[in-house]
Amino acid sequence: MDEAALDAERKVAGRDLAPSGEIWATTTDSLLMGLLSPLFTQFQHKYPGIVLDVAVSNQLFNLTRREADVAIRPSNAPPENLIGRPLTAIGQAVYAHRSLNLTPGASIKALASQPWIGSGSRLQDSALDQWMDKHALKPACVYRVDTLVNILSAVRSGMGLAVLPCYLADEDPNIIQLTDPIPELEYGLWFLMHPDLRGVVRIHAFMDFLTEAVRAQKQRLAGPLLGMPRCVQSPLGEVISADATQSHP
View: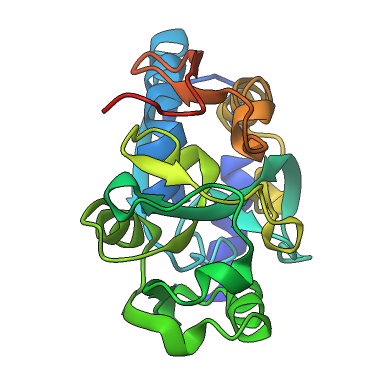
């Protein structure tokens, strides 16, 4: 489709006034699994006339070319040609399976002697790459994989330590948080859309709903300091407290 046709399609879509129809959304597998699925259910109950068509990818779709209407993405530098609304900050920390018998609060230097799980190149996490270089952790990597969900799976198997978003790892009581959230690895969560879709009622309904629902989980998504209660999400999207010490056998 040529640029003129794409421009016309976007402008026609922008004149939609009814909160109904389809929304093409894209997000990552980790966000869908650890945060968004219950919220999408709540949204569908509130707006039954809107159908969400969700593409799961760790690559940013081209919203200019209508590969998606909106994106819910982690980023510290969202594209300048899109309308963006910051939703909250996502904290990350070092985690390991409890079977490794590691003590929370140890220094990164002390943990460097353990096996680590790294991010594959297709994950394109330059901040994490730089952090691991800074702490000389790459030589300790015994495994690399290019999605956060699969890094989580490797940690669950006891393969080694990894940096994970707190909202993702804290859901599993057998995974232990070893460090406080790492400031230089914090990233923003954004709702992004093309400027020509700013007048679409269903898009704004979706953006406003997610803004309120995600910001209500601000504390959980930022991650707890060591020794503080964990917050986890119920299947209905409610935030509940859990035992930060994870002291059960």
